[in-house]
Image (cartoon, rainbow, N blue to C red):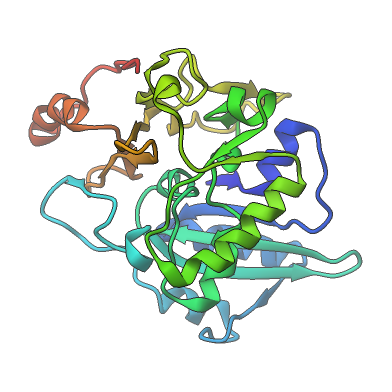
Length: 293
């Protein structure tokens, strides 16, 4: 489970946006236990137009993902326009008014975080939720033990947000609204980088392979440590940032999902895939290796 969006941004930036909700991201398979806990502490399920009023039925109406023969999947294989979104469930509590959005993924919820800069949702009722989460300035998230910012220097020191072209002409007007919102909050919206910065390996948006929790991340332990919580596995995820010839950003990764694994993972490229594949075929976990960009 990941807390992301504006809440994670506010936590790390020590800021406050009164119009923001709490966004929780989780694999669909595990979303029901979070939802039932929210109901137990007084939140009410607020169904969307296409959802039934009974959360149990609404949850079961969405399948738990697609079983594939191959372990490594491209990130465009399922979900709304291939961005991996399974469903969104809204929960509301009054006095004071509070809204929590439980956003479920077919595979790794980190896929949704990495797609913040380019999320495209074909269902209109979903679009508004992802327009606010499409840029590098919201590539931050909180787990049960740590908070992470994937591009901290750009986000919190340079106040720059690198975005990706949607490729969908009818969507650009709505994206302009989102750009204006983050510009009002103090971020410079960057659509492409000059070649000189792309070539600069010290850039806050340096290209190459990355791993969650690597030396380029800002990683903050949440204190006090709770002894009865299990160790997280989010730092097993990786991705790559690359650029087109005209300086536009491209986030690249594969998705690892197997029945033997409890959770799904993002995998940066074929090099890591080649390292993991023999062990997955033999059913033996390889030793942990941190790949630098």
